[in-house]
Length: 271
Image (cartoon, rainbow, N blue to C red):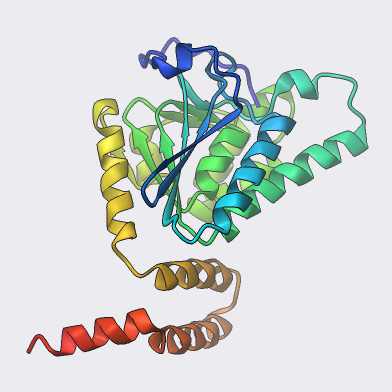
């Protein structure tokens, strides 16, 4: 939600970023791995209304593709995403217009969580405001060591209310509140310490690390991964007793699935 000064980020635009491709979200496939790439590097990949719609459409299409096991959410250029498009927000927009914008963005975030496949954020650069929110909503995140994160709307007089939802569910409450109240950046190492990202690697190793994580997930039972992801987020919002009841039922249903029966039988024959 803030305009960025990226002189601290040494990453140069990739060859793909320098092309005249005007696709907002580029879709690619590599076997069972789908990759969605934000593709407005010159504008720092804002989550404009059109980009939000393009991401929702792409996720909906992949949700129905049984051959896709993992989704990687990436971006071209120096920034992962600068958040909402301030050009749009600065126009003649009334309350109902803002309600529609933020409601639709929230639908995007929930689409990521409801996606049957795990979604991995590949964060090569700066992620601010709704861009940081998108990283936090992904199931997993791997960042380059020069990535930086902030929810800087407060610097413009706008508290990042919607980003506060996933931030407060990923990080300690006081750490999340500090980011929300100060708008200050944290580096990738701090983001990992606070739980915003899983791993931090040098930029040159980012794709290889993402590939390793994808391969590990791809090797697991698709039914177990999909049902497990669904259960994980549902139980987080429950009290402990209700969470155990839901988890016990989920495990029972999982245990009778063919993949689980095969895996248990194979393991017990080892002895």
